[in-house]
Image (cartoon, rainbow, N blue to C red; front, side):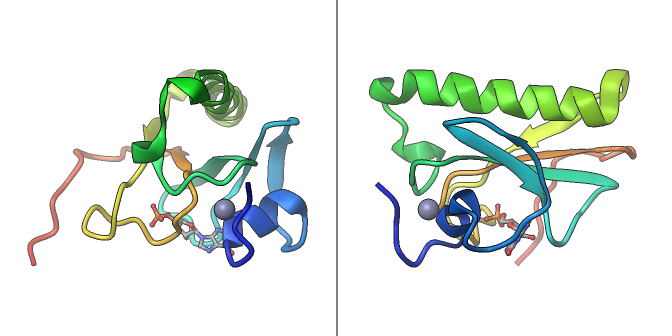
Amino acid sequence: MSDNDCLFCKIAAGEIPADKVLETDDVVVFRDIAPQAPVHLLAIPRRHLRSIAEVTGRDADLIVALVAAANTAGKSELGERGYRIATNVGEEAGQTVFHLHLHIMGGAPLGPLAVTEA
Ligand code: 5GP
Ligand code: ZN
């Protein structure tokens, strides 16, 4: 089920353009519009889920496909250099788009995962 007002549903459907690097029947990987690292990709399921916190056992195949696509794109772009896969749940954690997405980041030393003081 897609959400009519969801930006990433529209990107998955091709209604909003994005620089896509990988597409399958179930998932899409595209470049982040405001990259926070030299390589910054987003991997999304075509099916609308608000975040990883909504995932249940029924989504097992989809989540494996999502992680596999993230790894394929990350290895293609960064090879042996490695990459970070991260996903945010909720506004305080930094989520701004409420359609599940994995950030795939690399190409420079990323440093530790950090807390921004309020
Ligand atoms: P979040 O903050 O929800 O974890 O990540 C959302 C990400 O989506 C951000 O890194 C942001 O730059 C990216 N983003 C927001 N709008 C667009 C867009 O229209 N196109 C693309 N390619 N990325 C977007
Ligand atoms: Zn959506």
